[in-house]
Length: 279
Image 1 (cartoon, rainbow, N blue to C red):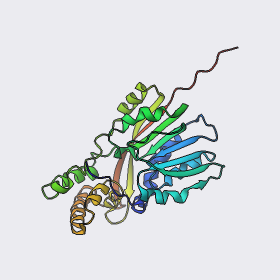
Image 2 (cartoon, rainbow, N blue to C red):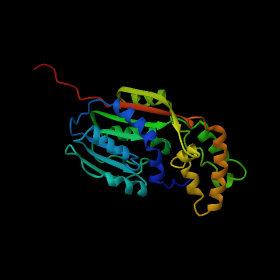
Image 3 (tube, rainbow, N blue to C red):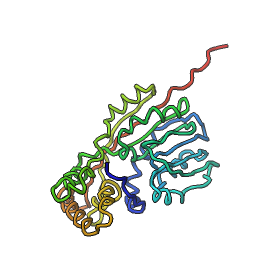
């Protein structure tokens, strides 16, 4: 199995405006939480913490904990830690979503663009749902663009004779993403109510030199860059070949480079406690 990628929070944040938009759309679909004005919230795969901080904007009185497996990401995320304007608290802890089991009950467990790195992540749903309060919410969004040129070309290049021995499999890490219908079925079978699953394609206009390459340097290209650490010449060669492929697939237009980006969303609510009948 390929080693876990080394993350660069500063590179990731270079496109933070575009990356944040799907998370904001996800938040807008989450309604009341059982914790009222002071809910307990977990953010799985919090990365550099910029979207975790948005949770504090939505629920100022919440106690929010961001979890991530990357020490580099957590170091940046902890710049957001501390009391929130509504009397809540924001903190961060190290944890791997592939094995993380909550040690307490949460009103909301949310994940933004992280579960695509966790093969079999849907198998973790039962453990997470067991630790969500009655009437609480599990919500996440993941990229669904693994068949797009940005990812397909990366996988094909990794599998060429030049790179296969060193990089086989490094470009194909997204095939375990489920469809919206499959997420809906999985969560409904687990007893969730009001399951909402959908997809959106964000047609983004990127600017600058080789902007799609710059985008992937923060995400999809990370496993390759990690595998080639210690061999700068090979890394430059690979990135140059990948850049040339991307230039053909995403030509620069009169207003910039058009980059469609498909996202998959799901929101599921746990069953509420039954209300008592009339006395």
